[in-house]
Image 1 (tube, helix red, strand yellow):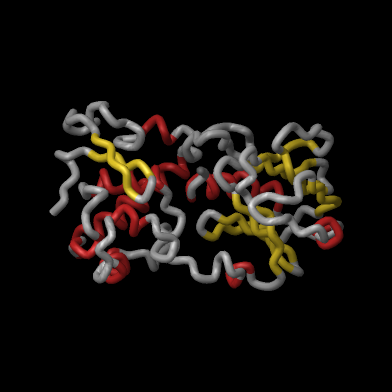
Image 2: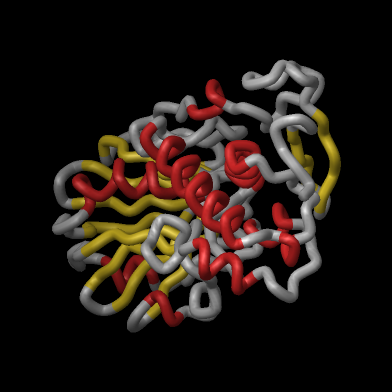
Length: 273
């Protein structure tokens, strides 16, 4: 599914084309996604101006003076910028039509995405209010991660994917960051030392930043707002490389299952202690 780098890539692609643009119409083709798209949206947004775009975790926030759209790409969604007369294709459920002759279109084959409306500060929406820290912001530190793991015996990979601890770290980037930190994904979180906590925070930041620079990963149907797929997947060290040689030491990459997701690691480069 699209993870933090894919959502951040989408935001950066959309922002210069949407901010300060006026919405002329809203088209809802499929009202029922993960949650129902609010029927009043066309009335609420016609002739209103987009003031800002932000990201919180894997949610994209499109802010107006009187409220905000909260968008989620689900398992296979993408947002595209297109000429306003572009005919809709299958799985294209929602259009935000702009006065400049373009539109923003949501494509979501599996319909696990979301288009919601919130009056007031969108950060206070129930889906966002209890989220953890952002991994690319200053308050995500080695000291924070160390304290957050003291009483947690779950595997460290599951902890860094827990959105109550830190947001937006999905399976791909958790695997990659743990490899670069030299930490096995099954290490009990409570055994993480202060130095290794700091190292893991650093590699999470570096992995996510690199993925954003490279446009994210090509996941199922994900493409950026310009229609181009990301290419971070060309640089995976462990993710989806089971049975292949480690790029560092040439040991065969192993695969296990954790929390119903696949984990990949090198038994030489990554340690349990």
